[in-house]
Image 1 (cartoon, rainbow, N blue to C red):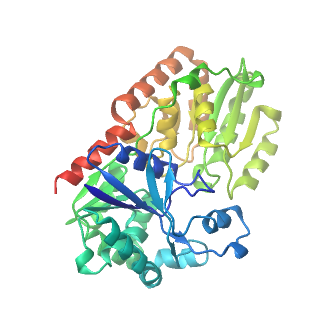
Image 2: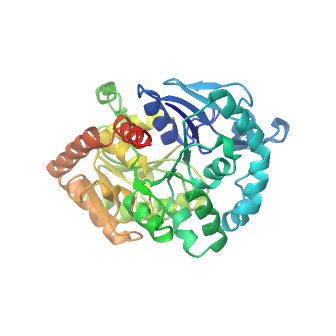
Image 3: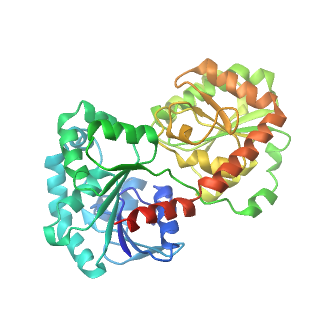
Length: 403
């Protein structure tokens, strides 16, 4: 079975940290015996001479014509198109997608048809109805194939309730899909409310199990004899890193051997640095910047607890990566991860935007060593049994095979 996989948020050769879960899913699909996979990641056209930021350079340096192969045998094409998810275009396009997507589609369709004619896929699989599903549903009739779409973002679905033009564009794509999938049950329920006649399903994200040798590598000297709370995220408001910092500051004096290590970067970094300065607890809070994925996994193995209290988290793979490392988690009780975890069994859950509850969860986690170890053991077992990418890829292929 030939599957053409469209994912715009996919790692780029110069930005391997972008959309790592999409690459992991593709790697798992490639390992399925009956699947021949080709990934198409349409990329904003940015002339190299105009690329100033690291992000723009990553787009400009993508190979525009030749096939790029990632580890695991994942073959990817990065054709260019006139689609730019940056403000103010992004805000206008989000609320009124159709006009701009029509322009983007005209810039992409000829290349997409060429790829289809050469690859001859049996199935289309897209991340997100808008923009990738839009490209498929606007192909000429002769190129139509069964379409499966996987949505990853609560807001993109929820906002359709009050953004009529967005809802119309979303419905136009969803009504062409054989199956519209969500990464959490809450998201699927929202889609069913919007489009009760569309066939839906939930397909949770997965994770590759961490290499076994990571547990044999000792901690750096400066973190030995310390309890480590680890956080890892894009620094945006929704990730609630300042709230986590303040909650840690509330209980830091009770646990003088504990440090909070934060991996990441992003637009909210100035606020995060200011919050750290305001807390005035020295080097107990460590911003370590961005790290390669392999180093993040190592940090998760070393950590005693992984804490990220972002709200409206669809089904963040960062939680199950930590769980796969045997590290218990602290998360909000409104996210998709609550489909699979149990409070007090695999970690602790707290209400969103609640500093006091977060501080209490940190206190409980840090003061009960045996329970913490038991939760980490349970978390690892849950991932091994139900949440590996191989298992999730098998479930996806079963959906494909039904048609």
